[in-house]
Image (tube, rainbow, N blue to C red; front, side):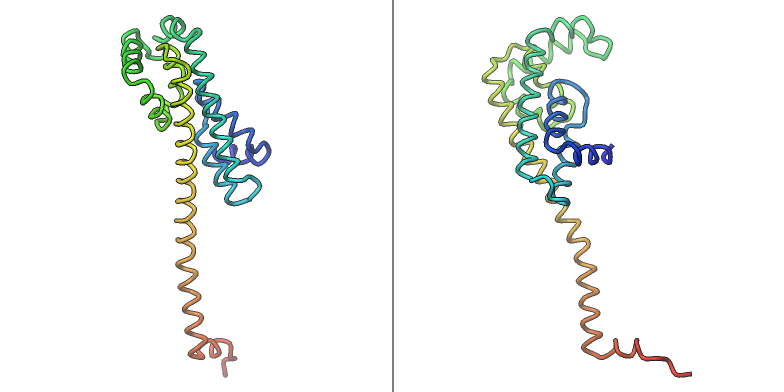
Length: 196
């Protein structure tokens, strides 16, 4: 899947990051986080996308997707879940528990859900179903989107730094060995013809 997303990012750039992160936020099980991480890595390697652009695309997609999910939940989510949720393991008891949790911990839950894959997908819908005030949801959703996007970028940067260190150490060792051989004149003997 990573290669496909990389290929699509190469062609569609920031728009793909916005679309996939947005789609994840409205409840579709699409790889928004994978798109963000792949775009950030692609940006670091190719310089065709800027890291700031990738972060902004992620923030727009995550905030917009969360708001879209909120309105889906607010307008028709509860009746839909009550009618069809049992097919995917969502019982009336689970709906009641989620409503209670979001009523008691709403803003914190919206913010924290951004960092948990399955919750990230349904946080907006659950906030809408529980009738959380929109502007409260919007604020915590946007803050979560900003922190999540920057955190994902940081993961990519740390991974790239570790990869560079992994490559640099052996190269530095070889460079030191070659320098030592050159100082000692040992390299010259490697290139002299062997007498028979």
